[in-house]
Length: 469
Image 1 (spheres, one colour):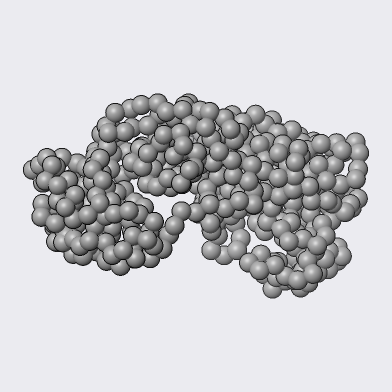
Image 2: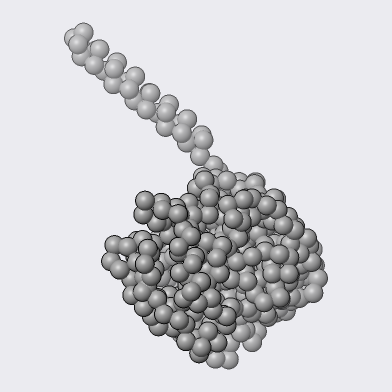
């Protein structure tokens, strides 16, 4: 063997050894989920729900969506046949040794009967103790004792990038385990009623139909969330799954155990986000906070002294970075509690104490949202008219001016004002008619930024308007 050959082989050996060393070190850092799965799986349950008729809007597992080998697997195992449209499946987990079980509301919604199957194949008829559609949580109970239980993690300890895993029954495949990381926290996913009380955990854990209601674990084997939703274009997992955080689970489950229903904090406001223009017009250093665009008559906010045009930047000691964050905070506060609220009003910060109201599970609240048509004036580039009496009555407002035309390239056009908007406030000046509109515009300083409140298609909205120098 020549010297060059020997040197080459030695180099290859060292390279392979180095790669193996790095690989082994990397593998050593990867989590081992086996202990968690062994200790936690017995407390995870499969839930089978029967309906006398199919639920409207509730997805069912169609056998045509299941690959042929899995279809044969279902038949071999004697599972409820998917073609029975009145049968649906989900997951859940036991939280007390006397039979309390947590799952999703949408798993048991409209159920005629609920059957719970444990890991040892025992089956129990379950009683629905209570449900909370707003958080998509439900509490069941079975007649059994000395059951294995899962521990709920402490709220607020989960971090983005942390390893998590799920156990459930996707497509009826019992006790399937999938793992991933936390992709984000505090995701806002408004419901069809535009309610937003859950700061969802986003993960890339593979979640599919049948995982709903199952637990999401941290590496300590504690439950950090309840798997609830997926974002998909195909019907299967694409790495965007969402879980209800343990802070919400604790609050809702405790109330369902105590009284079978949930009451959450309610402020009685319509809010909107703050963009760059609005931030400048309100004197904020950057876009942040929740802007109050409308108050519920005699609601908690109005009674406590909050005003339309206030920007809430802190609520009960919690920073409000954007408008979607506020309902998450308010919803967890016990009704009747008085909390400090930090607002920006007339470019000045001030603290107002607000007594939070209550919103029961069956209550609904919505400010008026009706349609309207079409909006002008001098320096702003607007042609305006008086608001017809029937429009005032329809919107429930006492005055304003309606925009009939917007001059292209004007300050109003750049701010996003459109024909049909009804302007009710410019800065701190209330707009009651064309005369008060003209006076308010005349007082504006060149180059200044000012918030403008308007009604658009029946809904209140603030926009930031910047005048030319």
